[in-house]
Image (cartoon, rainbow, N blue to C red; front, side, top):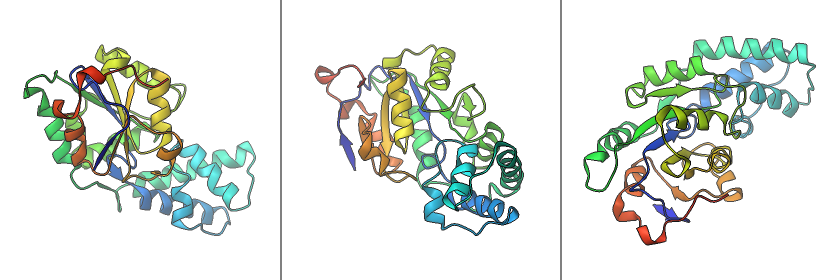
Length: 249
């Protein structure tokens, strides 16, 4: 199902930027396992997967910090650095144990890659901007067959700031020679919506991801329930040019 809150200017969109976790891939189990392995290593009890999943989205360091705080432990900076290093090492080894691309993602990306063949739709380029560290992000995209669809894949350590700061998205826009009103961010949480808003871009929110509840707090321009809805939402038939306006501030 597609719910249009603000009509997208699909005829002029030329850059599509995707979040990774909760948008292209379901990585929750591997992240939860890695967090609990880290907690165990440092003498803390495991947390429920559902609780850990709620901590995902603002980068790996924040995920580790929140997990220890959720376990009743407040780490100093040195201890947090040690826990973070262990988490990264463990996750690098186990990042693909259970992680998979959501059903329909590859088909949707293929359709979006070819959608410029339709009348009235411009040639579009696609990229990934995630708060996950860039090395595992690129390795996962390569292993799951996602990489060929993207001209660039950037992670949470690719820039001096992370989403929702617009730095990364603005850099991708510059690289793709796309203006804000020609750019669309696709993600599963309010972090992605705020990133788009902060860059002056448009946004699609994915309700099938890891943080759909946050999309009610900060609504995107369009809500979709499956990857298959991406192509439908970006079809000219879904948009009335007369209703086009600037992205929400």
